[in-house]
Length: 373
Image (cartoon, rainbow, N blue to C red):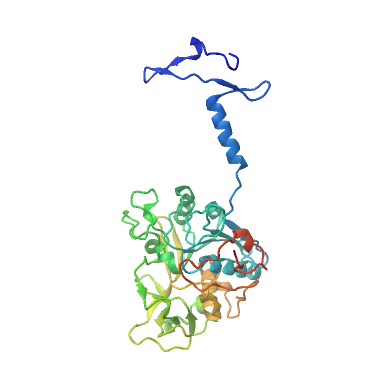
């Protein structure tokens, strides 16, 4: 049939199931020789539009090299609403890559235009976990696409080591009827009660310990753990800007440090006499859904300003080495200097620097963070 002709009876067909006449596929001329049906044309246009759409990148990779981490791949998941994970994670990634040889991939939450958006669940690139040797997560109340979460599921099932910072105890907030509900901080799924935070890191969200934003925290090492390799070179105390969390230590925890709320945000302030010190840094083994056991290191601190304190920064870098199975490579003078300009933002809701894309943080000399727009 030629374009424009009325379809004959041969082009009409009976709907087998419905028992009614169905529309014909009317051919449409696309070129001198090619004819497409209207349905095919819609499919063609959809694929063309998809191909023409810009690909939004939500990640960057810092290449590794020589060092104790050579050949190992660390994946960072950075998306929380308040504590500037989008600053902490790339800063740590640069130290690990440039100074210690780890290949580091940082996955950010982004908006529809590809700009970093604090707390966004729009994540892509979690397939990087397929060959990852370590996951470092700093996230809060996320609900990522189920397709992305399958990669995390596979990683945890094989016992991949995990380092969790600050709000990762409540990294996910997902409706109970969703296919990934077992990750939610309030999960009631059998075998995954209280979700990722409880099952992997050891604690879900419990509450603040002290007045956040008004009371800083002094990190104090547990005296009986001084011989632990994670504490090599770490001073007895460190200062963190982020307020304390309620930490509930289980029998399987090795508690390395506690957090003591101070009466103000001054690092030299006195301890709050009404607030006892709480467990804040520990290690444990986890098993996700009965899978292979893996190492977990958790710190209830981790705001971008927290790692300005060299003692706390060393604690986290050492913890990463331990989680990666490299505790024998930890030395008291392990390199922890920042790579490139590090100018963190004071943590707050809606405090994310606007107009910055992951690519703006590529390389080792771009500032964290740029001024934004």
